[in-house]
Length: 238
Image (cartoon, rainbow, N blue to C red; front, side, top):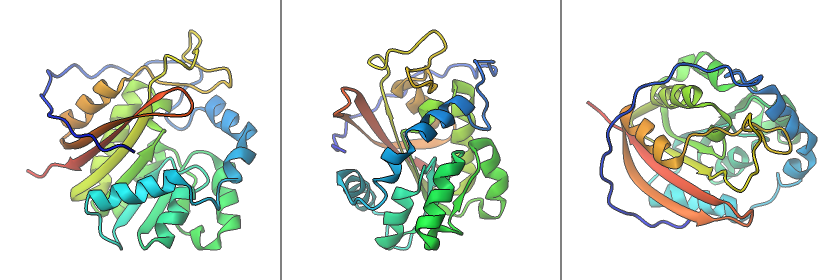
């Protein structure tokens, strides 16, 4: 990621929307989105061993935000556990969860050390799954995941992060814009994956409204012709 800080001016709040009934969308994990990732799973699994620039960028981000080795980190929407595997190897106490069962099973089979560190649960199930870990995580990492939730679910996800983080815990999130994805009327791409209409600006406001302080925001043009926004937040203490 490219770390370009800029001054932030708080914007006015907006009402919390009621849950909508989008096509087959469930906070327990959108089945069509999970199925789409399963169909292309080899492309994801083939990268498990790769320490590529994406992993390096995450390590650099943690260092830039003074995340010490040994920090307890949760990858929310970890897929096949690639980030968890490398964060663990680099000295972080890393865990992860994902609603994609094939990915979790593959990761646990390939890397036995991840067996007790990954859970096959959705966002809505995570609070219960991590009930004994409330207020214990130093950081939560969530890359390219929140845009698969509708706007009500996104806010619930942010509240989950707040519940799991300790005082002054940090959240690192990233999402892309969608205007180059050619979404249909149900906000699905050609693979059937659902993408939320929540913009980066809205996501930033949601985090601030839920009691987070914005630390940094940056932008990166990806090779997929999409603009990616990365944001870092700190859980505000009263």
